[in-house]
Length: 421
Image 1 (cartoon, rainbow, N blue to C red):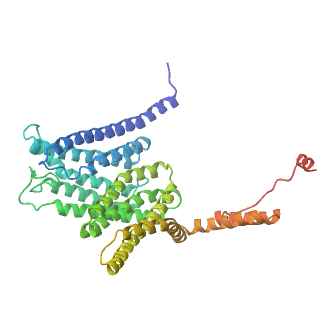
Image 2: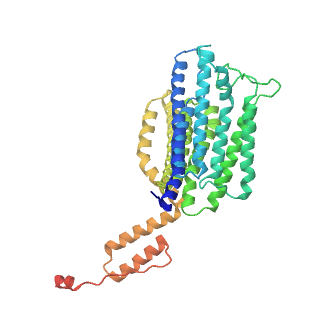
Image 3: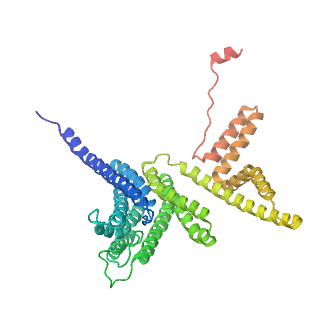
């Protein structure tokens, strides 16, 4: 029995993608299982009211799931692209950090001496988060094609690896209490070393910011067409996360507004969860051009919300001042009047903001829409076929800007002429 050469090559070539897909989805299952076990331990820890709750449980619950699923999809479809494998590694590291933290709290604080290796897992939780940030930084450097922006960027890639490794080692042997683990101390902490938590956080997040700002900016300036749309997706989520973080520390915390802090925190978490999803959309190119609509709506409703909130409180303050001056006391009519005013201004204000943003940031589409509206108006009144043809050619040339435009009209057939007679 003999087998053709092409069939042998095909069977050998299909082994690689199959193995890659199995490995990728196995890593996804591992991270999800660790996350589920972490949530179970979190519930057990939370049931003891006086026990410390793991500080970053929400982030480390949602991030491994999103990163693992998107990483498995990318790695199974494009095994040669390192982005999928970096996402799978980041998901497993985040899930391991969460599981280690919850396990250590349960084994050392909630029910001491009931589970083994509590100190060992506390030690893993002390430094694993550094590797997670390093994986994200490397993935951004290699986005979207798995290659660096240029040969000159190798130094930043090696610097990312070096700082990640050094930060993880420093955290692993840093003395004192482990952050997010309550009173648990680092079992391998060396008292002669300075505490690493704050310096390593500053270094790693500064590195992440430099990588995001530099690589995405350079790629955006060089990119054209599809690649430009690909870069917009992670850039959008990165801007949302950075904006939410900056507003939290610069506005929400200084003024002491818990509701605003929680709102901004929810935006940051949503942006972090959507980051791997945005990368997956960019790489597989599913609904790639929807990012322009998403950015447009974000700009419109962010500006609309800010304007309405500022107007709402300004009107309340002004009316309360007026009521106090006239009657000597405050009145709930100020709140009612402000609410009615905001409801009345919502639609016209949204239209004005939409028009301004279209003119300012989407000028070509705005001009094209206006041109089409003008052509539609003339189409209702024009009866000359030659004039309509010239107008149609002009509209196509102005809106689509092709290299050449020609209009061909099919002549009337003899059958149509007979029917007309």
